[in-house]
Each structure stands twice: as structure tokens, then as C-alpha cells.
Length: 93
Image (cartoon, rainbow, N blue to C red):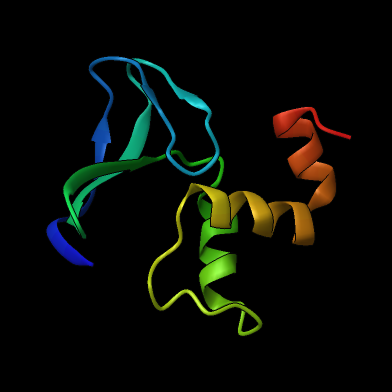
């Protein structure tokens, strides 16, 4: 994966969806934005709600995130490591 635009904090001028946790990022809310290229160029947005868990996942030595962490990886991590929070966020039993 190649980083085309380094992650930076922005204030939303329109509604977006967090690419990790699916939360709606409302107008005026701050979030992290970056642009990457793997097989194609894509933008990635993540909210402050999931940031501590994303940071934790990347620092957890039981997981290998050398290729990055996508939506499914994050959801799997949350269900394995933080089931109560995952249940609250995604209403699954």
C-alpha cells in the first residue's frame, strides 16, 4: 500500500461514513482523512469514536497488520477483543 496523502484531521463539510466502524461523521465533526493506493486509489476516513481501538489493534502484538487493516479486519478485531462495544455499535448478539 502506498500513501498518497498522509493522514490529517479535517472538519466535515458534508456527511461521511467512518471506514472502520460505519459511524456517520456529521457536518462539523472532526475526523482523520488519508488517500492510499493499492490496486486502486481510495480515500479513507475514520472517526474519533473508533480511533482508540484502531490504535490498540495496531499495537496488539497478537495481530499482524503489516498490510494495513480494513473494514472487515477491524470488525473482526472488535468482536474478538471488545464484544460489548461491538454489540453496542453494530447491534448484533
